Structures are given as structure tokens and as C-alpha cells.
Amino acid sequence: MGGFFGAASKNDCVFDLFYGIDYHSHLGTRRAGMAVYSPEDGFDKAIHNIENAPFRTKFEEESRHMRGTLGIGCISDFEAQPILVRSHHGTFAVATVGKINNSEEITRNIIDKNAHFFEMQNGEINQTELVAAIINQKENFIDGIKYAQEIIDGSMSILILTSRGVYAARDRLGRTPISIGKKEDGYCASFESFAYLNLGYTPVRELGPGEIAVIDAESERTLVAPGDKMRICTFLWVYYGYPSSSYEGTTVEEMRYNCGKYLARRDEGKIDPDLVAGIPDSGTAHAIGYANESGVKFSRPFVKYTPTWPRSFMPTHQSRRDLIAKMKLIPIHDLIDGKKLLMIDDSIVRGTQLRETTEFLYNSGASEVHIRTGCPPLLFGCKYLNFSRSTSEMELIGRRAVTALEGQDPDRATLEEYADPNTDKYRAMVDWICEKLHFTTLRYHRLDDMIKSVGIDPDKLCTYCWNGRE
Picture 1 (cartoon, rainbow, N blue to C red):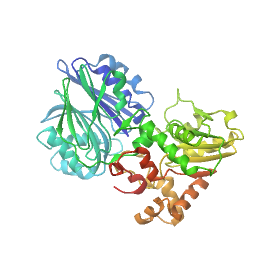
Picture 2: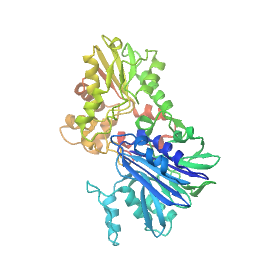
Picture 3: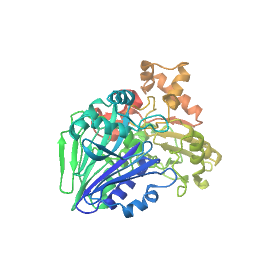
Picture 4: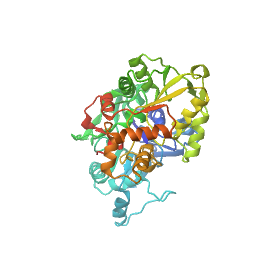
């Protein structure tokens, strides 16, 4: 995944830029960068690897010495960015959030015009560099951005830093957000709407799907009006978003409370746990919602020790993720020993970490461990964002269950049967996962309940990874 932040100010914007980017650290753990422009010194840029140190530590030097009235920055799990480009548009910097499925085709078409690209170590092309190349095919930024939105299969939201202002372009179907903030001496554009609140900005608005806007120190203006069709990623609320984030008028924390509420209603009278708890951190709000609705006591039977441990989502190798996830968990035995626990996690991807957590609770004395999740089984690999990019579709525990039950790789029609919670096949899949991961019971959030939990028009939500529908 990734997140970005841009600022335009009458005065130096680097302080706001530094902390605005840092507030996106929950969205990426591998690469980060800042690019600024000042009338006196022109463009400046810095990119660092942040795998072994947080953004603030790696960019402390830049925060003191960079200067500019305009700037953009990005935190990402993959591509190094923002990149700085010189072209017939002049010099500009670009940062992106999204995924390009047809990058090979686009790259070939551009290379045929005697252009070239730098290959990354994995042999792929930096997708932000590719976006810059697409934009450069047209005579101006507006036409170039529109062209990128038209030809990219996947999703793409873009920030562009020029000497005149910062262009912000939301993905054509609004799969990811961009929010505009304002204060006395300037404007900002941010993936996360909360990222600018402590910097003195007040919310102005969210860009609509496909909208292109520009900010400078004096104003924010729409250059291309938004489209009518939206497919914002529902996983933003389920997992990616920070609790204080808000998308399309619904906060992440509120949505997760609602998830827990509907999970409790489906469970009413079926089990009698001693306590309900969330798998930290993103499962905590789900558990609070469940406890508030059901009357079951909310507790924390274990805590994460995080001061010196990197995020378990970060390492490339599964064995390292498992080790870090296990070593971070500190039990509170008085709340575990002999207890029937109901644990809520935001999702189950491979299932490896949740199985480790369950075994950890049993080894700590739990008599039962019931698992509930904040979303339905993941059956389709995401086509639109870089969610779990290192996870192949067949590594998803839901997909593995279906393959095992069918005895072969399932076709689309079969997967749709398993995605329907009212079918025997769905129940068989859930039972298979429950047994494989050693849970006492398992129940997933239903898709209809999850959509109700968000509370916006279902036609505006992307639910592809659960039901395969675009």
C-alpha cells in the first residue's frame, strides 16, 4: 500500500510536509521520500529506505535543511518515490498510490517511441516512473493525467509537484481517497484526512472519483470535474485506515464499531464467552463494538510489545513475519487462564499469524478460543491496490480451503458459490478453515453486514476481494 501528502504555503512548508507524510506511516514500511520546490533554490528531493527505522528518524536531516513553499511526499511498501523528472513540461516530481496491471503493455508502447526506463532489482519498472512517462505523452499535465487515468488497468491516484503548484488527481473510480485541507497560509492534499488536523489545517473537501485539482498558497481549484461512478476500497475501513481516518463521511473507528455490533447480533445466544478482545491493533474497535452490543466484558488478555519491534506486516519472508508476530505478544495470564475467549481480527489472509496467536492463547491457559473477523473470507486477489502484494491468490486461506474441498483450482462460478454465506459450500469452507487453524469456532463478517457497517451506497464500494465483482 502507500500514502502521500502535499503542501503549498506562503511560507516554508517543510515542517507540515514532514509531519504530514509521517502520519501515513501505517500505510507503508519500506520506502519514503520528500520533494520540495522553492523559488530561490528550485527543486530538491530525498528518498530513503525505512525498513529498519521510522520515517521521522530517516528524514530528520532533511526536515532541518530542506526548504520550499511547495512539496509532496510519500510512504510506500514498494516503489521509491517521489521521482523527479525533467521533460517538455519542465521539471516536476510525482508520487502515486495504486496498482498498474497492464504495465508491460504500456511500457512496450512507450519504449517503441525510443524512450527508456530504469529497471528495479526485481526486473519491474517503477510504476511512478511509468506514470510520469504516460503524462509526458501529452501536451499538458491535465491531458497527461487524464490519459493515465484512461489507459491504466487497475487504479492510480497521483500528486504532482510543479513550480506553480501541486496537482492532485484521484483514481478514476475513487478507489483511494484524497482530501484537501486549508489554513491561513496555504493548502494541503492528503491521502488520510486526519494527517493535517494537528498541523492547523481544517477540512475543505474530499476529491471525487477522477477529479483533478490544483493547490497553491492562495487557493484550491478543480481542473477536471469528478465522475459519477465510484468504487472506493472497502478494505480501507476494515484494515488499512487509521482509527481517526474518514472516507466518504464514515470514520474507520465508527465502521469497525458497527462491524462488531453486527457480529454480536449474529452470535446472540450461540456462545457464552467470558470476555471479548480484539487482535491488536485493528481488531480492537471491532471488539469494542461487539462488547457494547452483546454485554460481554471487553478485556485485553494480551498486549503487543511494539516500542522496538517493526510491523509484522513488513518482512518479505513468511517465517520472519510469524516470528515477529509471536515475539511481540505478551500474555496477561489472569485474563486467559481457564477462560473462554472471543477474539476479533480485522481479516484472515493466510491465517498463519492468527493460528500462532490462537496457539499462544491455548498455551497460556485459555479453555476456548472463538474467532470472529471484521470482513468476509478473502477469495480473490486484489486487482486494484497493492494489498498483500507478496501474497499469491492461492496463498489466501479461503482460496486454499475451496481448492482442498473441490480437489482442484476452482472456476469463477464455484468461487461465487463459496462466497455466498447461505450455501452449504460456504459453511464447509468456514469449517475447514476453523479446523485447520485450531479455533473453537469461527465466523466471518457477512458481506451484507459489512456493507451496512460502512453506511454508504453499496454501489460506491469495491468488494472484489470477497465476491469477485468489479
